[in-house]
Length: 281
Image (cartoon, rainbow, N blue to C red; front, side):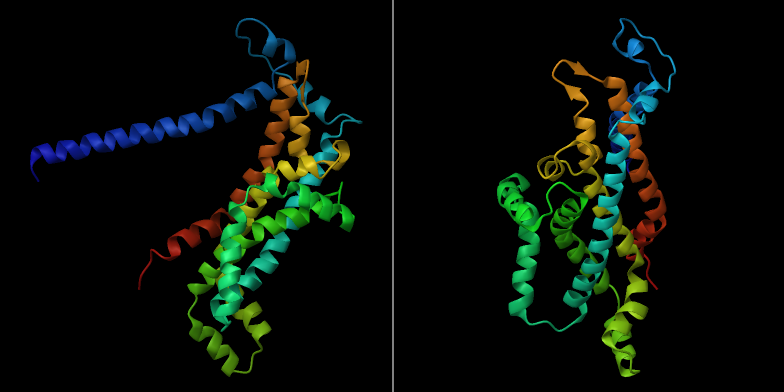
């Protein structure tokens, strides 16, 4: 290889590494600063100069009796669990049907168009109509309504993603099971579903993160306080004449823990799903 070409590739590699390091630093710096602020007393945060102390007062104030944040944390966990379970159940069924069952085109084409179009609609446009619908159904002001809304908006992506994973499973496995006398439900449950565990992990992780971070519906469909999830509780720490920086950082730290745990638990299946298509033979 000519020397100029080799040196050019070396320079490109160094530049790519520099850009990658800069991107990682820009991503991690705010998270680390939030973690530091969460353990700082208020006087050190708002005081002049740089003072690094250590205090658990932000966490004790947030978790004190009468503070709604603990109830909001429980609400967020319930919303995530409910949304993930519904998206996994109905998303896997829909993905299996779209991938393996001989559905007519007049049914599949509108469904695929709707699944691709719904995520493109700004949720703010749908808030008035959804609010009226949820009110008539008696689902305003509780976690059940937010579970339903999150499921409606995350289910199209979950179904399409599961379809992609079911497409990677040989159809001969389903045909062999049916020939052996297994029902369609038994084939789905015992043969096909265990082969798409990476897809289930990917769907569960994505829908869990999106439901955990959702703010618009949580703000408009609840009355705040103990009925709201954690995202609304964190936003309420910004008051007209005061910003509770320490408590906000502590709440953000608490909010990051469940997402980290979800990602760690699902990491093995996510990696298996990403590398499955790269292995041949």
